[in-house]
Length: 552
Image (cartoon, rainbow, N blue to C red; front, top):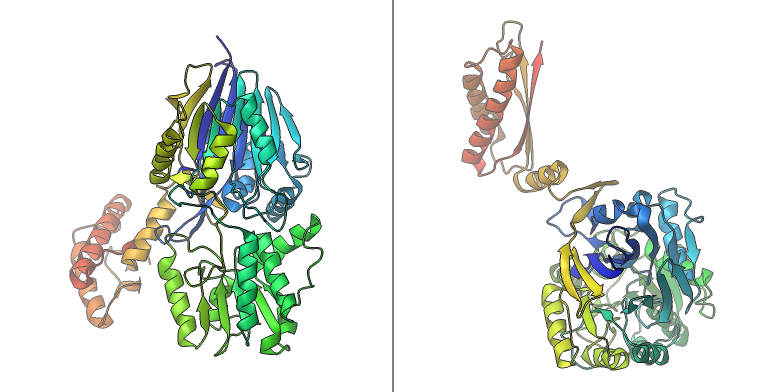
């Protein structure tokens, strides 16, 4: 059997978020594997109590003896957020540049894991040699420090994994995209390019952080009262811009929110943000006049526990907004968060606070490539094949259409779990399927989508809860009245409701011998059914019901 080169996404294809990509090389019975990125996505209201969702790593966990390492392209949560949850099942080396490594270290500290023996820090533009994979880091621009593309060279050919990227002509922090290196890679020949699809529907170019800075400074100069800015904490260039604008307009700056402090600390640790003014503690900022302070806080998407939401609800202990102040949302409105943010914006406006968003002013640029930037990349690389990733299905299909327009011979559309044979083959193609799914972080336990805890919580959120305790005498009779507790049910006349329910329970009890343990089990099921049916008739809900039979 000949050696072969494979690609398999377990997450991030058909969705934006929770990226996890696999590459394999070798004979079919003896593949060597690497992982590129291990990310999360954030749960919405359809999964009450769940914060994080990440790809099910079972397929690669089964092959961990052949796993050579994990390579991280950059430090966004959708690329590193699941690493401390999945790594304990793999226990392999992790390769990352200094800023990404600093944030990864913090994640493992939270789980009380010393990751230093396994965390290998790679210099920018560095190389990683993992068995048959010779990996070179390519400097990109994106909305975070130290984004990297990966040139993955193997004996069967070269693959370019772009990671997240854009072409920013003035990114403020970090170097320009290394177009010279990318052109050189294209000249050498590229079997396949695994490419970001996020902005495939956006024409033109994504814009520059420098242009955002110029416009934000103009806005700062016209504002006379307190300014509160919220942006993605990971966007260090935007963070530096807020520091710059504060200094230029004679204001102090204060950071609010755990993530903002964490990213600031990591950036300083890695040699960035050295020339900005020192931020002051929010408790001290309260003593500064309204026209001399800027707060930079978390909560761009209206997250309930984010600093911006707490400030707008007047529940933050240190920061308060007043009539005439301004709130600037220097971020994209992520699809799905429109209602949450609209409510937050309206709440601020009611209080007499000016709200500025990307819909009103040029105060945000995307970190992903628009179509003109994609054209640049295609012209530099000229790959034999393109595999769109990092997009929903509609993005990926449009990216396939775009690749055909760009005369790419063999674009390949993939879904999570598809195994693509890149070489040796006349053209790359999907030839097999790996098991792929999702894990849901419930508290600190990872569960499947169909787990009882999620099902029960959904039921509770929709139908409420009822608990009935039935006291049984030694003769098998119900002693006194059942003890009924309800939560989340729309009951107007509780006494009438309880009286009717007790009658139904007593009628059902007469058909069972409650001194017989086997009949007790059957009686519990019957009581549950009666309680749900009675409640459905009364209030239109079938509550999650728990029955306790207590012998006295």
